[in-house]
Image (cartoon, rainbow, N blue to C red; front, side):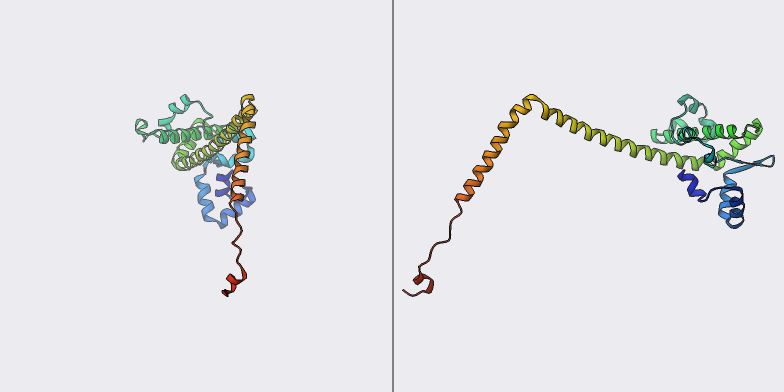
Amino acid sequence: MQFFKSRYPRPLTWISLTASLQTDPQLQRRLQQDSICLAGKTIYINPFLYWRRFDSNTDRWLREPGQLCEDQIKLNRTRFYPELDWCDLDEEELSLKDAAVEMFLKSLELIGTFHPELTAGQLLEVERKMAVTKKRAFERWVEKSFRRRWKEESKERRRFERERVLRTLSEWLRHEITQQAFVPVMAAIFLAGFAGWSFGAANVTCPPYLMPSQQTGIK
């Protein structure tokens, strides 16, 4: 998880985390933004801090936008972006904000799964802090995800186009009419090349022969 590694370059065990917090104020500040203390227990609100407990399907579900239905995202737009007028957003901004809303929903679902003891009031506190501290982080994450998806799709389109051209060329060469026309064409090319070579060789002449008297100037 690149986002997790960039913020927390070393694995988060309790011993290493305690030692790091004592010596790294920046790490302490980041962890304060990525967690909330409820009833004496630290709850991570950064979903990537649970990555050690993910299986491959959960990891893919969290990282890739478009895993939740569109209606569910639309119903929760104003829940996380009450300040926005969604009608004024262009298509790109709308896709970005919707993907961020999806990240909020998936993060809350993960937190509820890993902390089933949280009450509705405590989950509301988690949501409020998440809306304040993680909004821009989620937007940056989905921007990177969109760019990565666009590169992969562009690469796939180029590969498909190359395969289509090669397949079309192969089918054209195997076609009976093409094969019947290929021999005369190659023969014409060969004869034209041979004629050009013969014509060039015929125009090559030896330098004029000079008599000894001409060479010395003595008549």
